[in-house]
View 1 (cartoon, rainbow, N blue to C red):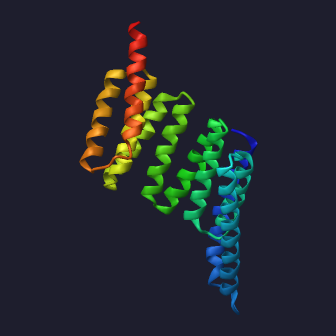
View 2 (cartoon, one colour):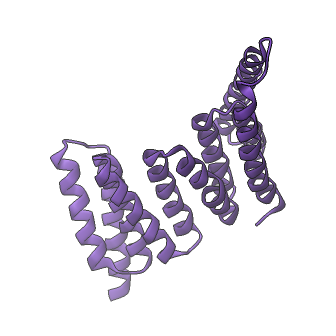
View 3 (cartoon, helix red, strand yellow):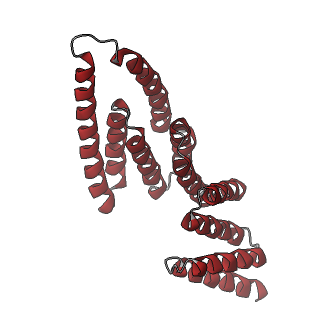
Length: 227
C-alpha cells in the first residue's frame, strides 16, 4: 500500500473518532455552541463542493494526478462536515483516479479500507453495491480474476435485493469479462445471452455496445484458438 493511501486510511479512522466526539459535544455546548458547529460544518461542506467541482474539471482534462489531490481535499472537508454521502463520492473518485493512472493496488485499497467501511457505517446498500462493482473492475484490471468474480457476484446479489435491473445486468457483464479473461468462452457466451435477454426485457439499449464488443472479443479469441 502506498504512503498516500495509508495516510488516507489513517485519516478516515481518526475522523470517525473525531466525529463521534463532536456528536457528544454538539448538544452540550452552552450559549449557541451548536449554532457555531453548524456554521463550521456548512463552511466545510462549501469548501468540499468547491474542491470537488475543480477536481471534476481537471478529471475531464485528463489531469488525473491533480484531480486526485483535489478529490482528496474534498473528501477531507466532507468528512469534517460529517456529510458521509458526499465523502463517499469523493473517495470513489479518488479510487477512480488511481485506476486511470494504472495504480490498481492503490485503487483497490481505497475501496476496501475506506469506501466499504464508509458505506457499511452509513448502512447504504446502494453504496456497497456500487463499490462492489468498482472492486470487480479494479481486480480484473489487476489480473485478479477470482477476486473480481467474487465482487461482481456480490454486486449482483445486492442488485437483486434492491431490484436494480441495470446494476444486475452490469454485474453479469462484469462476470462475462472475467470469464473471457479466463478463456471460459462457452460460459461467457451463456452469461452474455442472459444479459442480452434481461436488457431486452426492460427495453434497454444502453448495453448493446458492451454486449456486441464482448461477443466480438469472444469470436476473435476463439478463432485464434482454432488457428
